[in-house]
Length: 125
Image: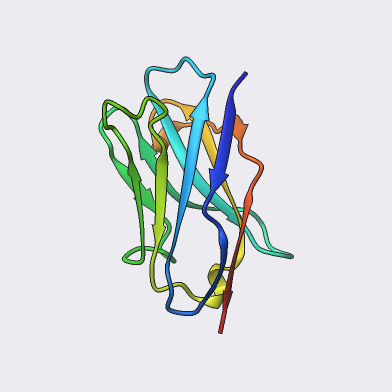
């Protein structure tokens, strides 16, 4: 069974930083994508960022470019290879529930079929 567990959310003032972590397990894809999505109250879910396992290529939504950084821990002693979303210069409009998701292939062509439970990020002005 595929499982994704997010951590690191919380509350912060505008201009602050948070780092989200996503640990995925139970999958067998050799080539996969881990994406971060968010959903604010009353709004549709939107893609925030994504990283491909095959080449480490990344994608970002225009709204977070230059402020958010996605990365993957490839150190040999960390078999779970968590994916991080470093969020800097946070704005109140970044407030949302953030989800990580897993899918086969690279970010540009992946269909994200497995999702974490979501984690709240609140940015106050």
